[in-house]
Image (tube, rainbow, N blue to C red):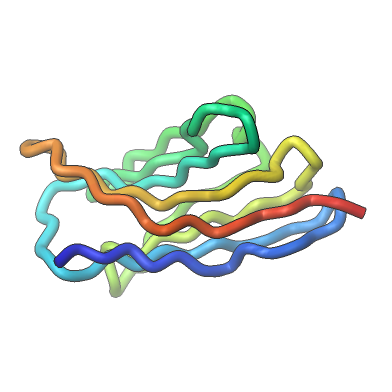
Length: 118
C-alpha cells in the first residue's frame, strides 16, 4: 500500500519561511514525478512544484524565486519544499503527490496546513 507522509506545515508570519517534507513508501517507483500541490479555501488544487526521478524541476509562477523543491539524496522518494518570503496568498493545504510516469498511477498525501498570518 502506497503511503505519502507529509510534515512541516504550520503557522508562520508574513515574510517567514517553512520547509515541508514528504516521504513516499509502500512500492517501488522506478520512473516518477513527485511534487507539491496546494488548495486554498474555495479554490481548486493547483501545482506548486514538481521534480522527476532525474531531477528535472518545474515551478508554478507563484513559487518561482521563493520556493525550492529538492529530493533527498539517499531516500529518492523523499522530497522537500523550502518556502521563503511567504505571504497570505500562500495559505493553503499543501499536498504531496507521486505519479509513475509510464502507468500514470498517482498517489496523494493527506495534506498539511500552511497558514501565513500575523
